[in-house]
Image 1 (cartoon, rainbow, N blue to C red):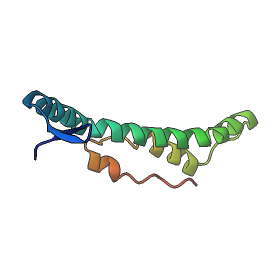
Image 2: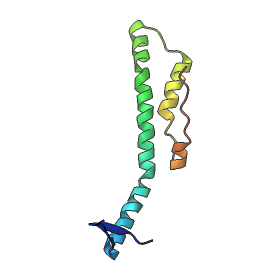
Image 3: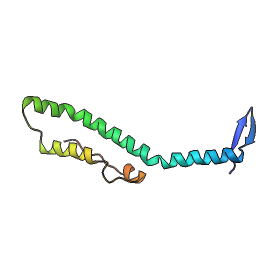
Length: 99
C-alpha cells in the first residue's frame, strides 16, 4: 500500500526515496523492539530492588541477617534478565513474589 502525505488537505504520494526512507525507519524501529523491551524490564526490576534496599540497609545497621527467602527474592530479581533473547521471552517474564 502506497503511503501519502497530507499537504493542505491534498493527499500526495510518497516519492520512491521517501518510501525507502520510511521502510528503513520502520525496520530500525522493529529491530529495536528487544532493546526497548529489555530496558523496560530492567527498569521495573531495578525499581523492585530499590524498594527493598531499605530492608538490606536496616539488617546491616542492626547487625541481623536477611532471611534466605528474601535473599533468594533479590537474587532472582538480579537474574531475571539472564537468558532472554527475544521480545516474547521478555514479555513472558514473571517477577518473583516478595516474601
